[in-house]
Image (tube, rainbow, N blue to C red; front, top):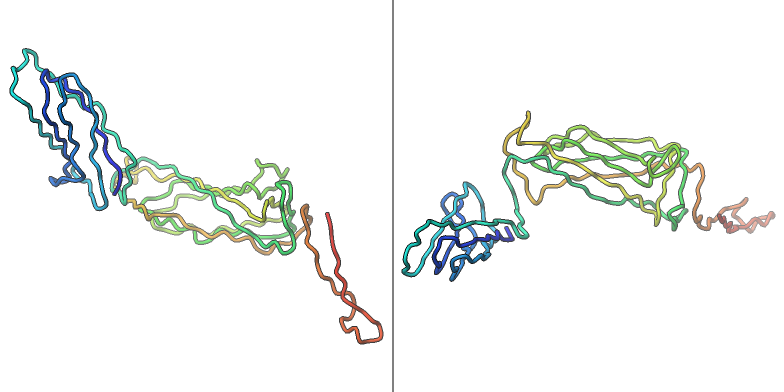
Length: 273
């Protein structure tokens, strides 16, 4: 739907070319503009482009070449018109149907939690959990191709020695095209959450299936609107300990009726780390 095909040629025919037009045909119909070379003298090299636009479709591709020249004495030795390069330049396709090799992709996102009680303003701040649950639900492969491997990692959720190498990692089995993966629920007891700015980041790394060979070989269609979606929820947190900034809490001591004989009253109690 956008971009161009840049074509580089060299004239080694032994005579000057007045004009050279190269058109790309899809099932016999021209797509994009025509790459035009003017006054391509013998021995010269130039580059021209076929520019694509929204709605262009490439299928059963052929090339149409038209050359014109002035009168000349034909050289004793036959020469060649060389196509040196044919490369895409900022090509964007709205959809592709093909037998595809495995494609790797990755993304990063964040999940936030409430900062009413704790604020984590430094990378070393954490909460250690006595209980809690992280749920990855409704992980949907909305692509027209299966996902061979998919790994979700949470660098800030750690157990054991609480180093980055001890971060939580979830691995999924094969997810078929246009299907939903099983939900995952992980007990966070004993984990520490390192969440600078009260945000937990997570990374998704995946690879699609091979449709050029193997049991799933065959053409597939992928679109620019294809996506993988999921919801990540952290809930039921019970804190064992915390290192960070604990906000002021209001605590009621005794009866809140100050008109009685005891004269009880509300006190603001501040905690500091």
